[in-house]
Length: 191
Image (cartoon, rainbow, N blue to C red):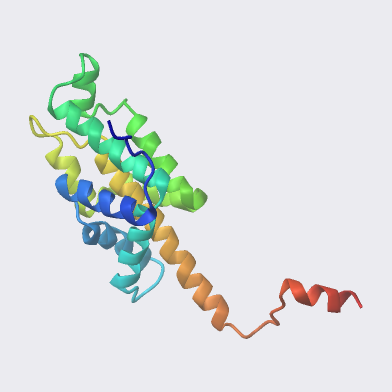
């Protein structure tokens, strides 16, 4: 009897996340499109490559791996009618008063702080791109995306925050209006 694996490398988790998302009808590029659209409100000309890189970075995190796979599994089990009522009906119908799915989304987006959570709120309310598609398809009989639409939105929100951080770091590095010092300069300043 072989030992079950429960720990994976970042590369393995990225690959497994991409695969499970694809099985559920979501591509990395679709998430990156939401990321780009959200950041385009603040910065022009954001390269799609940076958005894709950011989504893939988020998808390589262990916590995100757990969120993605748990969400996909819950939705799959609902489609198979594996839950008892009333939970089966609450999950299938994506009851507006059921907020556990949004809680998971907020937690995932919170990996990038309050801004990540704010970005998630925007995506969750406005339901753009593939998030809208998942939400609409999830209303069909036998299809459930109650958790996945929020998780995908949260991935886009976290990636959007990462894009902003990368762009701001590049801007700060190119700004010569102040003297840069390192921690090694503090000894010289004290003298």
